[in-house]
Length: 209
Picture (cartoon, rainbow, N blue to C red):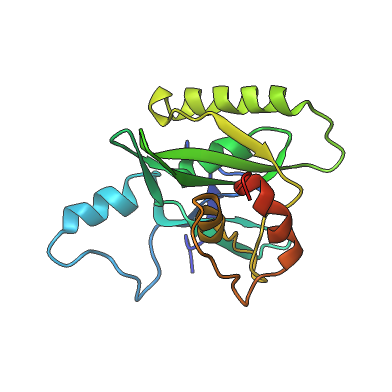
């Protein structure tokens, strides 16, 4: 269908190369049968889905296209945390972390904080062959988040990990990571790809364990 295409765009609306995660969008016009409004709130539909990135429908999902054009949906971009009264998107922060040239993939989760309500904590996997001091990397990533998200994010925690826990379909188990970090009971989903990855993360997410 003319004009119909699924693309990956960054936070500024620019297309990203294959393998890089970003916002999943659909070029306008939408195909027949697609939802074209929200019942009783047409303007909200326009503001939320049609005006964020010009000429595109914003799905609210994050993902990437591989070299063969297959789409991988990684999660929602509208996950929010409350940091000192400020509602912040962890998906938006992940896009910033992923923009660092040393980062292969990443996850940002909101952890319980007695003072702020929640605080953002980032976990990154380095690209193969990258040799960088972890403290220097953390400093650079914190500066990136401050630049693109703002000081309100109060983003200060970056941990380098060997791998992130995923389902067999490639979805990062952010909820499970958050439960572990908050000291809550958690269950390992049956769809997990490699339980050893989660086992290795437990002492990093829950240092007192």
